[in-house]
Length: 68
Image 1 (cartoon, rainbow, N blue to C red):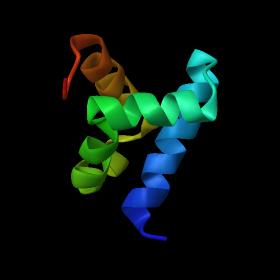
Image 2: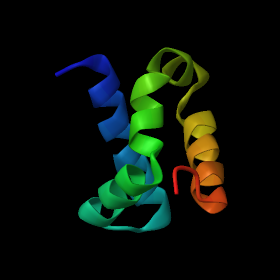
Image 3: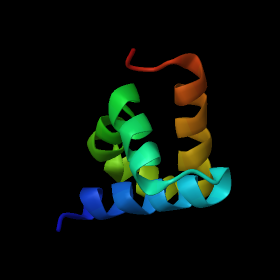
Image 4: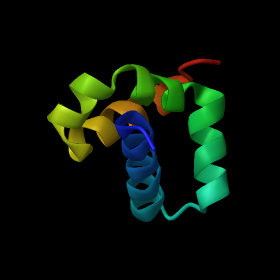
C-alpha cells in the first residue's frame, strides 16, 4: 500500500473518530467532495503539516463544498 493511501486512511479514521461518523459515510463524504483526491495529490505537504492541520483543512473544504 502506498504512503499517500495509508495517510488517506489515517485521515478518514481520525475524521470519523472526531466527528462520530461511520466509516462508509466518511469515505463517501471524502470521495464525493474531492477531499480524498486532495489528500493523495498533496500528500507530501499534508503529512508533514500534521493531522490536526490536515483535518482542519479538510473540514474547511467540506464546509465550502469543495469539489461540488
